[in-house]
Image (cartoon, rainbow, N blue to C red; front, side, top):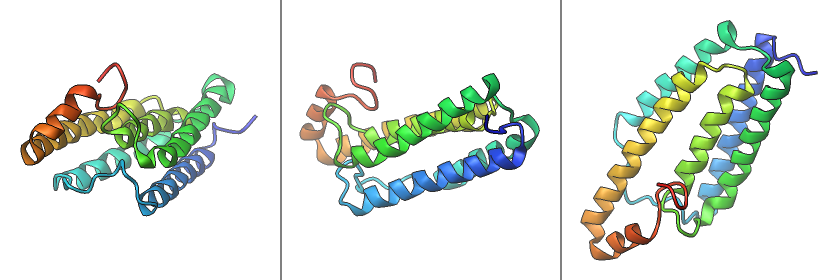
Length: 168
């Protein structure tokens, strides 16, 4: 089995998954992504807050990371992170019935990453802040676009969901 009890292996896994997701993100954006609406810039605090969340997560990898369920839990996390990476490229043209598919896929990735490197506290340090920041930004974007675009965007909001069809 893969030695997830070694901190160096966990750091390598995390860095590799982040790199692959970043590459998928860059390719999706360059390919004329319809899901990435550039009309609403993110708030100024978003990048520093994201940096702090990722940094806090990285600080937990060495002292708290481990092999989960004999390494099978880590492999499940890697599979989910890989699925999120592939989905990021797949949703570049949008998803019918979902206004923010890119955010939903990014949240799946941030939920999978702590599992992949065996850091359950990562859900508190990384996933929860990412969820809160994403919810705030999605709500803010909907509000600003509703004000800017008016009735057509409000009609879109009435017939679509933010992240998950049938839920929110």
